[in-house]
Length: 487
Image 1 (cartoon, rainbow, N blue to C red):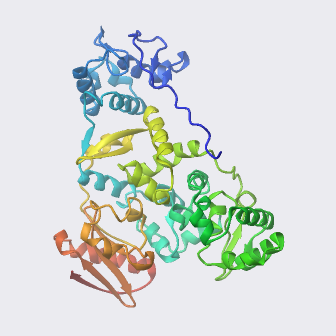
Image 2: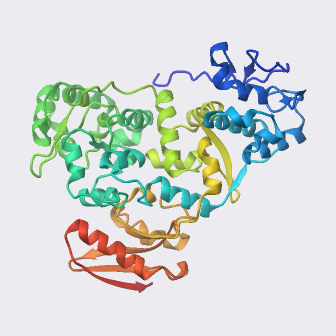
Image 3: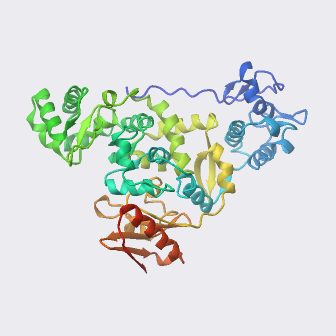
């Protein structure tokens, strides 16, 4: 069975009001003596020590509903020192605050309320988290790719523009150089599309993609190959790519020779790579260095130094989910699942993994204008206090700012405008972003950059559009005339 049984670590609440400084049961397990200095303040607050009184707070089964609301609001406002503990603010670390906030939120559902955020705050925070403020100097291409949880690379020029849009001083050619230098890899990943990923992050994402087991569905086998045939192909690929880099044609011949089955030739040579994607998800192959215009493949364990294989899905989730929410949160579980593989993961597993992350203080549930979502616990305060982001950005086709939440997000893209963004053939338009929302589209045609602004989005500063167009022109080496219209 692919999934090992997930055993959630204790979320039990103690009926005892343990004194400050003693090892005590918390929703994160017992705090050992050698960690008292790190977690002591969380324990102090959580065990009911409020100005010297033994008053239970969240974590105790005797906690009153009214007290829970008071505690939640105090922690959300970070007024811990005045509301809960006389000296907590002096030594409570950011990690401790995140743990406490996640803990309180988890246990006040029947008597309290989740932190409320607005979409304006969310979009302003996302723009900065995704480096679209361009305030971080000397941000290398690999660092940008890691922040974005990968960059879709079906169209190489779009991938370059996506990374350049987030750099203060982009340099053309840096992205393919990073792939050549093995700082990035190219492989089939999220939603079955080609992505650039950092080698240190790829195993976690691939593990979750492998956990979808999409190729085991009867409809997949009817349209492509059977599981028995796929297993034989996998063995042939693994053997052929041992320490080698092969073109698609070379790999096809090697696999046919191994399997003695010429009927799989069409599936192996297909440019869509449908039969090879399950192997990529399982870490059996990645794209190799370019050979002119020909695609090549290799094995990550023999091509990359330090490749450790794929972790168990539960372990991968502890990496991939927080990474995603750190750039695209707050977001629901379903939005993450759609981003990964169009809802391919089982919700039972996802809910368990999210619950574990909440228990660990990594995530917190919030309310975004009536919609329940998860956010990184340590970022919630920053989201609530974020300054507006009013600048204009021109982002290329297939940009992660759209692909992260998906084109069905009607807060990001007006409901009537989805057809303008998600087009025939899976094409995702280049977009104009203003105040964090999609306000139009743009297209580079020869010596002209055509911009179409959505009339319902209000005034978009044309000077900023022209400045962005000039930035793109400088990077691409073109000198287009900018034409702006409303439609």
